[in-house]
Length: 493
Ligand code: GLY
Ligand code: MN
Ligand code: MN
Image (tube, rainbow, N blue to C red; front, side, top):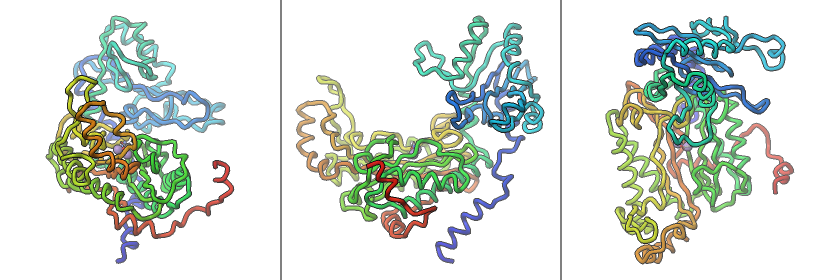
């Protein structure tokens, strides 16, 4: 079979799998709530859904903690679980049906359908505070899970959850309070088969978008034109939205980690970091490719790209079930440092520079001048989701883990102006400045997604990533939804 036919069959298998397999079954939500309840002491657990968006007519996104425990995807809902000994009473609060409003905004769930969908007793949301008043008035402790920062110095912004909680605490100042969000995060850290199916789909859609971006890339285009094609593909293939602001960063923007203005005209000779992720049924992918605007990497770009790719390959080989995540990150850092030393951007793999305030002797690895983020993170309902290997319940890669591996090198043109002026640093600057100048504005990140099933660690983001593969796909032409109309783009010049 040709590679094209294999791809078409693989995509068909992913997208045409029975629709039911793409949902989280009601029984799984029940199991999640049961696992949480078993870890709670006596008290009332409150989990708030997200409110209506504050500005009119913006899209609604459900709060992940609430979605994880209920599957309910409409605004203004809440979950209350009352735990006494080993018995638990669970109630869902939802907005009431309202035919007049529904004429404008579509049908609401209402209590009856909420009960049918979830198996939970459901009452209208206006009952939430009276019910809480009565339970807390009877002396029960309050447990909360969601977006809280309860420390004494919790800095703004104050989340919706916290605002609601503060109102409750004003009425019940003596109620014992416990933030049980870490318990939910531990549950979320281990993905079920149904969740892994959704993450796999999010990744498959994101891969298609990357492939089209590679085919479409054209010198003189604006970054937003590539963003538009990417997000077109997301919706075209059934994702509800980008899981985070799409990053299409060319030239000087390629070295800015969270650049997302995407409004620069791209030039031949530059690289573009494209860091994107579809959200499918609430689950995020997060995949980065770095490509040359012209379709062919320069020798300097090639050298940096290959170091990053080697680091990712080394990390990927180390990322086995049972491996310590810290060991995976170490091997990636070591590979990056050895590569940068070979190119001459750092003096030696273990070389350091003076990084303390003037006068202090603090040393930092020279590697950190060019690589200054973590190697990866969990993915799931959030693009940065809890994962078992990354602190939520453990340090090793386990069945049900879903995570990224995303090394990068970013040669900022001003990097040597950012370090303290010391004799040692002056010597370093003199040695490496020519190399920094030669590689300035080359930012390369390669980010892939992995899930752990009974078969082991699986790479699920199979967009081209070897230099030859990327350049070959960029020679293909893009067959898009419609041709580009130059007069529209001229509005932005
Ligand atoms: N796209 C955000 C990240 O890579 O972590
Ligand atoms: Mn990431
Ligand atoms: Mn990313």
